[in-house]
Image (tube, rainbow, N blue to C red; front, side):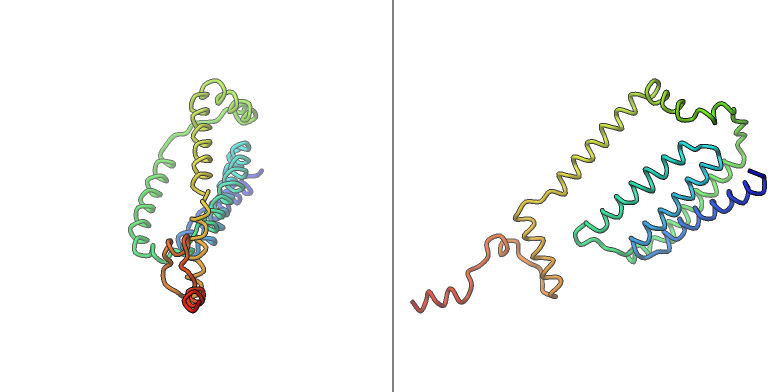
Length: 206
């Protein structure tokens, strides 16, 4: 790739990454925010490609774009009574934006001021093998701890998502009441519903 093409790709992918991240802050819909996050993650993967980090770019796409974003969408859409907008976060947007700006300036200053040195050509051609050997030989304990934590998180998610029959009935009744514009539903009335009025009248007449 020529210098012009490299610089064009770098600045285009950088604008794509920063633009997607900025739209996350502007968007008032969580679904749209996740879509902009996917765009930002794709830009980061493209930046990895410009740095000749092919393996990390593929991992970025497979894990973050293909798995984490889908997990976020499922979490937003399947969470009961989840707010789908960011309207309540307007008050904290100013301080949060100031903190992010300060961190961004500090990161850019460190990146520009640091002497990173040259990268060996062999390190660029054998990425997957070197990363695999590092995980299996030198970093095997953190690798296994991460696997155990992910398994524990999966089991916890299943335990939290599982509902008893009574809980499911109460949740369905509360959603129906919200759709019909009624007040809160008493769980006791759902689990042990009161006797119907016509049944009580029939018993009284008999």
